[in-house]
Image 1 (cartoon, rainbow, N blue to C red):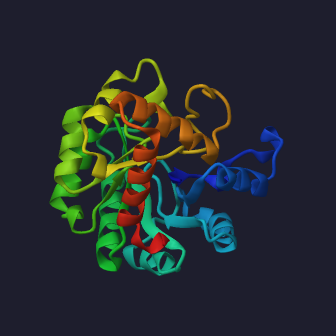
Image 2: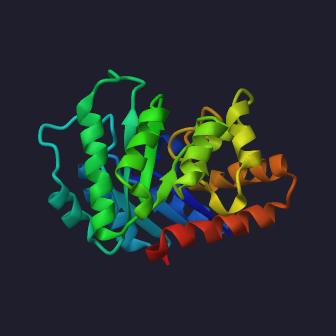
Length: 258
């Protein structure tokens, strides 16, 4: 059995796939994907995410505001706490820093990130961290805000071993997406080989970043098997061992998903 620790079921273009949402979910379940975490990037996502999660015991949800989402009214800590109290919400995020499309001096991103960490600490739910071209600032804020009190995961890991070690030292997990299967992802593959198994998760980030051999197509939770199989091959271990371990890791981190 496997868990897709990070997907966006509400963002998939089901018409383009030629499948309904229920068919995609059922396909995952039939392929031994026993649980899916549907992750929010905008607070408006909850109107779509929560009905999906409420309709399926095998689906949990998160609440958060992605660092690239621009809003007129920045949500305060208390508002986020209220939203996060829903029983299907098991994590805060995705949140973090993304300097790929924005100025590195965007104080508002850091402030938003800090607010999300405060929410996680106050309600004792783990964080889902997005970081892109912001590794140093991301780790510094996690340290300074004592995010290790609640822990979490660096999702869709795209950094080097030094960054991975910094996250691991804070007690965080690291999740690998389909990117690890790409030929040019040598740094990520090295991390996947070196890191301790008890801190590893796998994900699709569907509908984005479909793994080889589906690269360029619409991603879906079923394809998390390709990610797990690739990493098992990298580490020269049986697929079953990697699947069982990453599944156990998921439930250890997101305890309320069970």
